[in-house]
Length: 73
Image 1 (tube, one colour):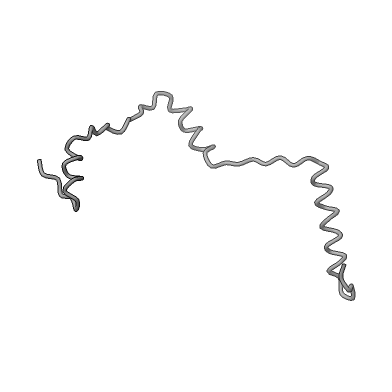
Image 2 (cartoon, rainbow, N blue to C red; image 1 turned 180 degrees about the vertical axis):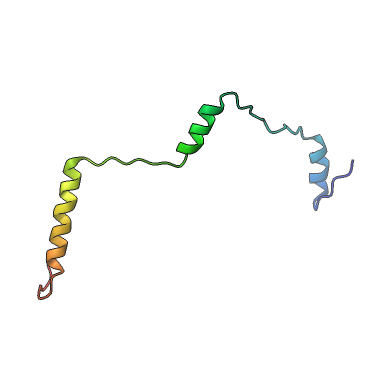
């Protein structure tokens, strides 16, 4: 068997390599598999009440500073 290769040393080594076939998986529980596909890529983020209140307070401060006539910080 001749394997086209740019480097002759690679061609010799490639004949000696043991190629492991890709492992295949068999789905046995289709309900679980389908549910996993639906959830995949989903991300849920939880914010504490304190974090939300701080964010709202910061947003109000920014809005006040953006009012016309305000000179800045």
